Length: 273
Image (tube, rainbow, N blue to C red):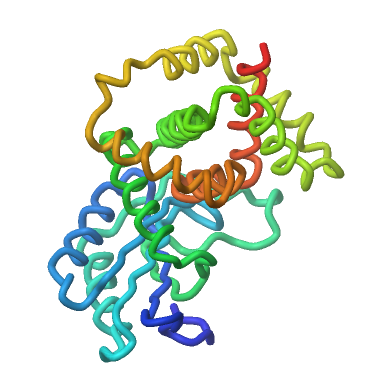
């Protein structure tokens, strides 16, 4: 499926291809493997590959591929590779569409949609951070792409990011981020809905104990991947701020909007308990 927007999108010295592959969550690890293999086998053509999870309008992955503007149009090559994969290895979606609760239908499973999204920040600085974050995310989830696992991994990275900030500034930075994220929801009572959802579905003491363990982790036991990520996270927070950092991480895990607010509500209540 293709829309009318121009493909590729040109910015600076890069030609960008933005596409969404709608594929059941249970098989996301297989799709990630295929995308990474495609990229690694063609690094003479492509200079960047960003991947994010999402379940907006159907479970899918957002893929951003970049090459030099002087190369031929790569749309057909990408299209053929992924459509062949979908034909050979179709996934079976277990998610029932919530009829009556949504205005528009989900995209069909096992389909490819071009230019459904477009990334705003395409600086080399951000590209490097996104790629490092996604590699670390894959290590954290260990091929388990369930919503609970993605939520837990996202909460972990956002918590670790908070501790990249000077200790005397953490409380105010977290408070400002929570306010900035929640302000768009106030007119729709979403804040109360999030708090009610947490109270009814989560064991706060268990969450608080988990967050305590994140704070008390021994730095000497950090993996090389985590150490590299922390350095990059600190730089991103210094340049873009903690609010934008949280948005970037949640976007990678497909946990924007109310899910992001839920994470910040948990982190804020724990920090101030």
